[in-house]
Length: 166
Image (cartoon, rainbow, N blue to C red; front, side, top):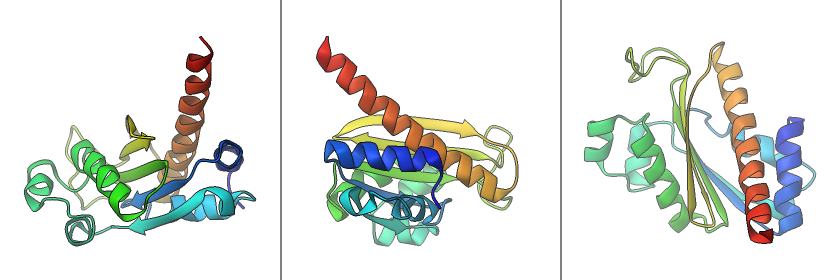
């Protein structure tokens, strides 16, 4: 069963006639799966790509190896590029990319410890970037990130409506 936040987001996307696609590294498909478990998934979910290893980011999404080497596979810069490239692979109204560090052994540093998650969302080409630090076990880090993604999308879509009414 999807979280209530993801279910609410899926309904909002469905009601607005918007579609969504995902490029997932750290979450390894869990975000797509959560959306797939909602009642309205058939009307909004276009698909997802799991690109856990850097070679998938390079070979499928065509992320420059130099960009990955310069910033690491788990970075705001690579996450933004993943969202941009996803648009060409899975056309949708909203693209979401996630990278991050849920366990030791990646590119963690004192400035980017385990629990650091990067999200880049394109809502009809309008970018929204998040960098968050979560604590807890890997699954909890991912679930927190997923709920934050859904909440951010709903807030941004609500903001669009309010802004257009002004």
